[in-house]
Length: 147
Image (cartoon, rainbow, N blue to C red; front, side, top):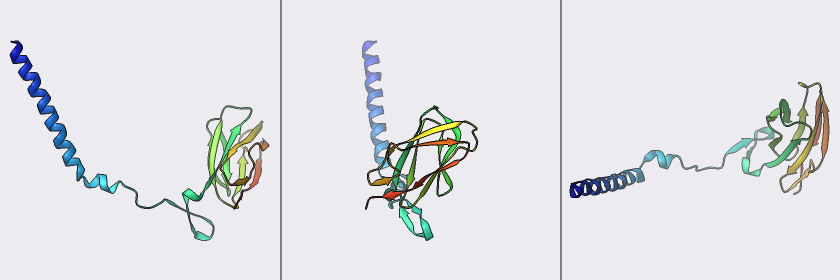
């Protein structure tokens, strides 16, 4: 009885190993796997239609000072919503000359916001800058990069 059970277990292990090897060999030449490899850097359109690599963008991180979330407050970059305060922190990608604004028009209370961090090379807005939004749109300013 023991010998029969051992033979069945050994046969099952060998069958599983052979099946795994066959599956791996078949996946080496899988055309879907080869098509999934990116071949170009993603592009984004900037001013006047020129293409700008997303990798050339810089990041600015904002923090709500007096609330943990305000999902209807938005960060606008060039008057387009780019970030929502659905938690305490929002990071947006910016480029040289982009205008950043905070839209708090959907709230009738004061919102204190700090520029928590900026990418290396971002001069303005400066990390540590604070703004108060009181039911309006507040201009943080134009992005200035260190060249």
